[in-house]
Image (cartoon, rainbow, N blue to C red; front, side):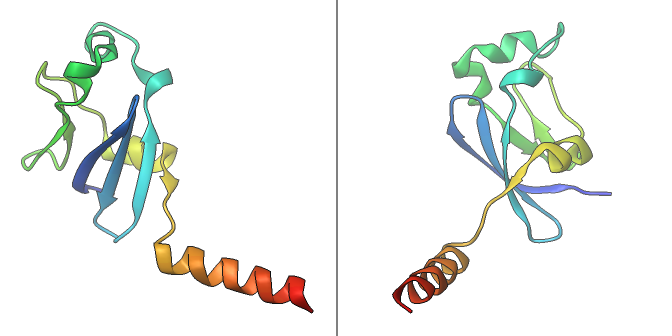
Length: 98
């Protein structure tokens, strides 16, 4: 079972979420804003109100919408830390120079 420890608006319908296992994932919710509760989130002003509800340990919005942290974890794309990206790039460049 997963829970969310941080939320940050990125752009469009994307959020950067921190999870209890230390992972950071970017979720794009554009395709998932269907139904009576989620349709209003297509208004970016409302979408940007995303915050963590400590009782639910997940993201909630001002209109009462929330999403299961397990679902958000599953659809999220893991963000690589800057150090990992730099290390990978360095290895790639060193390999090309050989």
